[in-house]
Length: 461
Image 1 (cartoon, one colour):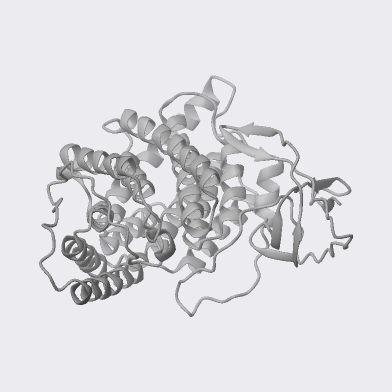
Image 2 (cartoon, helix red, strand yellow):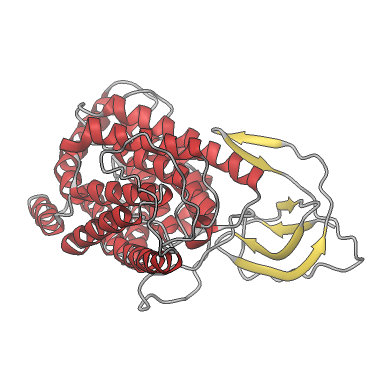
């Protein structure tokens, strides 16, 4: 039996084909439950359709118990998305339903703009002039953001607005940048609302906005980051797809900058999904490879752009994300799984590269991520005291700077490491083998396969 869902484009329909699967809950888009049942299905061979390296599958669901699939749709959906994990943010956040595809998403997705004018001449010159002005502003704001200097960030941003009253482009640019800081402070609902406000103003503006296409793309990139931090994998995936659709096809500096950000979000959302959902080993391996592919492309682009007229440090965060993917310590559940010697060695290589090449230029925000990754590495190597020390340093830095998104994961990590240390001491009263310390990121790669710490990965970036 095939399940057909009405699209948002009128009478056109999409058919979702799922075969040979045991389904307990069918989830659409941002997590709407269509029906709850358990059936054994059969899978035929399925074809894949690539979208910038992504793999999409088309399958048909055939029930073998003669039962009827009940369709119960709460919202209009256009695609089968990732299963969702409930956001662990502040309790003040409302649980109201938000459509998987807003009016703005639908509008920009269906009539996607081109970031760069295709015509040459005065139009190109005007765009490049505006783009240069944008980058000057971003080069002032982003180092403050990454270092956790949020008060200075706000002061500079407000000063720019004060000196440019009536400039809608700058107003929307600053609002987007402020939304990222708000998300770092774990006010994810407010961050989303700020981005939505930008998209709404762009859609309804009667005046010409020279940088409209660029702002639309960046809004969808930032919105993707907010969704993945809430574990809304499906919404993040569909949102970055809009950004990817309208991204520039040229190879100039700004085009590569935007492409690097898109690749980073695609990789990061996959990583969160891998850590959040139980997966078969073969399925996990494929997704890990895909996530690494995206992130390595992002790192290459970021390295090329670093030192140019653009501020970009995604290669720092990207290497840390690659290490985290190999260490597989994002949740308590995955920490129970065995991590291979090769994965641990690969993670060490990434962390060593960060330490040797970028230690002197790491922002405070990057240091938090670096300490967290080192803690995970020491955990896998069985050096719980070192893991505890590094997690403590990361927590203290996050609390001092106001990276509230990091605080709960590190507290949970420390709580569980402490319990594990206590239980280990009680179980093994005799002298233990010498533990291997990797404060210098040594090449030792002896895995430690006990249960562990944090219930969620750190997701500032």
